[in-house]
Length: 205
Image (cartoon, rainbow, N blue to C red; front, top):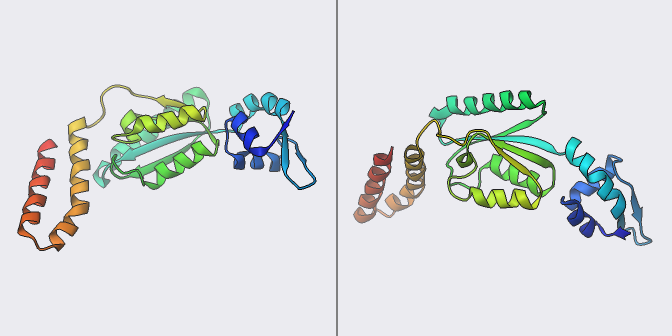
């Protein structure tokens, strides 16, 4: 049975662009209609999918720290990835971010999500659950499940710094982002609010 690229992508659990890339690499054969539409053979896709997932899809390690003074922790995460992958005989690449766990717009995280949605990645490795996001990691896990991406969490125990310490850093960062706007209003009330928020955030550390 032959199906369109949209149905074929859904069947294979990948992005349509991934099918085009497989075609260009000669991994799958595609039939063209008189109007130049692609048609994919379902039997061929089902046969080749397990092999492609095993050999073609990337394995990505994602590392993140909140601030520049945590550079040593970022290096520690990368070292854990290297040891973990060497022990399993995997090839891999690393994406990393320097930024708050409450920021969804970090470059590394955005690239990771794109790889997942394009069907390019088969396994993601993180040192701790909160390395993805402080709040909302479950959303990323749901996306991974939809695209048949395995998530490996190396260490499910305690993190190098406590939850309260990093949460305090995140809150302080958010406070700093808005402080310029509040100070800019030249309102004594707003300036007092900013100082109170900073004190509360610092008390968590």
